[in-house]
Image (cartoon, rainbow, N blue to C red):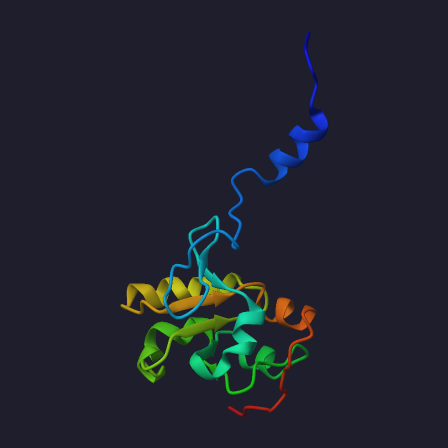
Length: 146
């Protein structure tokens, strides 16, 4: 007799291979950093808002975006991604680094650039400023001029 368990199989397949952050060890001693499927180190917005004084936030969007509709995280340093490799020396090395962009794609690229330059304590903000805003976390719109 064949027993069909499709009601159990489909939900199990939907999460198959997806790591559960609640049971995975963190990749970093400074915060709950996890690897994405693409091998990018990420950290959650809620952890970041609760620990802003422990990290340095690096926003890699363009100035128009930084000053734009989504705003930015208070005290974030702005270095657009295309300028990052040439301006790495401007980033303070004394705290772990969290990179931020609109959705997380450019900040993920920034973590790769930084890792190649020897930065070990770096993670991308999961979901970027879109995720930050969706979680109703505080933003600022203090303008930065050219």
